[in-house]
Length: 375
Image 1 (cartoon, rainbow, N blue to C red):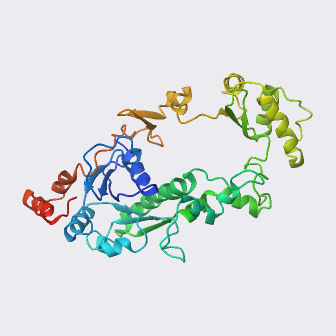
Image 2 (cartoon, rainbow, N blue to C red):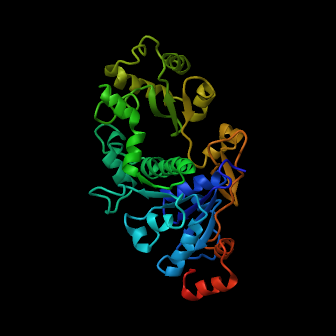
């Protein structure tokens, strides 16, 4: 029984950050009802973001389908959607429509640009949003173009996680006020918030505005990745003096030559020398020497390797569900540990069961089918 057992979330099926947010709620024990546009006949075990959810299929362009969704909102704590601004209102499922049925409902909205502003109605993707926040400009090597950090910073870190935090904050407040509200999540603003340390450094005058000129962006020899003799990589993050001293010792570096740790003028030369040393051994050999010490060291693992690492195995950080290896629910709870998630079900597989629980009779379900409200 996870910590959110008893909570009900309605999720309008989409792509990326909103379904990820719904998965976070489901992982923690909430009942998440995913509204799909169309039923599917087969299970979707590889769609990790759909795990643990109940799936129903409604035609939201039909009055009956809209009515079914609004009826579900009557007993829900929150609804989350990722439409462009105005779409939900045109469908008749906007905040005011939902509040007419349930004044306490929290209405979570996930977009890249936000609900307002000059760009609110235009298309975009993760890379565009983190371009506007300053995050993408900071990621990459000197003299080269910025490197997209997959879609971790915008979609999931600055989007889905901020949506989950915002919705939970609003649910807590609704418990005191009895009133719901809109949670307007912009991936531009979420990714800007993730850059708080860099903006702090910039304000203090200790952050260069170009790539690979700073301690945390790959410029420093003691905070970077290095290739090993077998073509693999290790990461080293020996920032603190005691950790840096241990790096010098275990890597067999010249103590005097590497003494000026924070002299930025020395960083290129020291990085070149450290790279040459790391290249003399395999990744496994460096793991034997440094892993488990305070060097601040780790092997750079592929997605295939990560689930088998002894630390991840010991903590059960990954789980295999119906043949699909995936991350376990996070974070951990000492008393209300969530159950292992169930794999994603076929789209629309629980439509009738969920609607029956909402009070629909067999005759009313037949009428919905006849009207094309159930897809």
